[in-house]
Image (cartoon, rainbow, N blue to C red; front, side):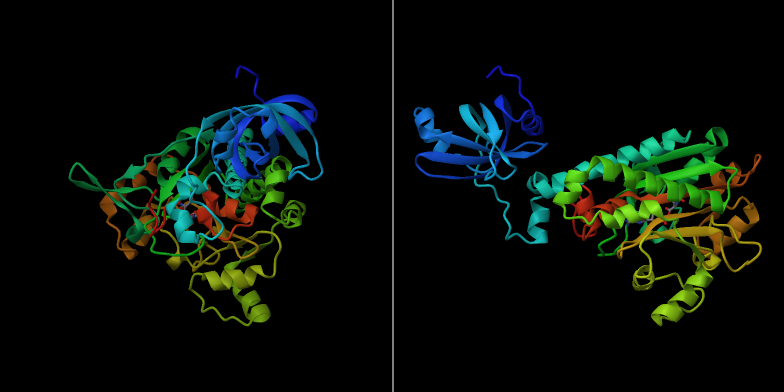
Length: 432
Ligand code: 4AD
């Protein structure tokens, strides 16, 4: 077939006359005289009708076609209320491109079996819808930061030491040397910040966390940023603006996908209209006690259950600032006005989606950094380069990291981050 092929969506826009489309069989039914095939391509699905009288020579092959066989079709398109998408193509020519065996995906499969067959499940309309939204999200993140004058900066994936929590590092046997997979771009970005001032990345981070939750992956895409000369308030302004930018892009570009996923878009629209509330950790403890009858002892990080209870009170993300210094990463500086706390924030998402973003000002006081690292049992020699970075013209600076899959999970209304990425990696899932 030498025809000019168009997407099913384009064919539906054309609405009448001759069209040439190609794709995979999504569903099929019929009799000895007539066959109805729902054809799928990346853009849409459409019903194709084939009558035996027009295909007497090919009928034996057509009759054997199974779900996921690939086809080229030339025919006439017209509106038909009975067809799944309101359009139907009456086929005039068919070319069978690739036959399919009995496709091993069906509604009865549980999460584990779908995980084993992820390479095939990825073709499902649900996964395609999520992947399209994911593409909008990552594209919007790049667009947001570039639009604000940020440079994209890449840091190494293989690193000699930690940053967040030593025990959650994956080891790499590097020619006999014990090295690790990165958990964050941050420490290298701080070095580059002295040359670029505003920088960002969207890159993989690795966490050997033994958490089997709906929010943890062992390999996730981490959107991080670092900015010179700013403090906590401006940092949170960036975080809020970034989330609103991404959500508004998805609302504009992915109406169809959100609808397919059954997402209540009002819950996203409201986020664009309101300012995200900002509370200190101390205030949050009071809110939890007063409104949810939960007493968190001062000094403990908030647990998932506490975050979820808190977020029942809000319909937009909120910021929680000034967590207890002792339970925070070593680079988060002490707040001088309230020395038991650090100048940091977490952004929590509504609808029980937990922590989306974590960020802070950065400590440039080398003695304080050493004290914090020692308290955490880290080896100071691994951080010599980090002390060096802040030994030559240190300035105030701040940055944050966003869990890209967590944002996608929330936007799409998914049950788990595993469905926000093509091939998830968790403690128990590393193949295909
Ligand atoms: O709060 P975290 O650990 O912060 C950092 O890594 C900082 N160095 C970032 C920075 O300031 N540049 O991680 C940041 C975010 C979290 O808020 C969460 O959304 C996500 O990364 N995240 C995970 N997402 C999926 N699976 C995991 N195991 C995650 N761990 C953290």
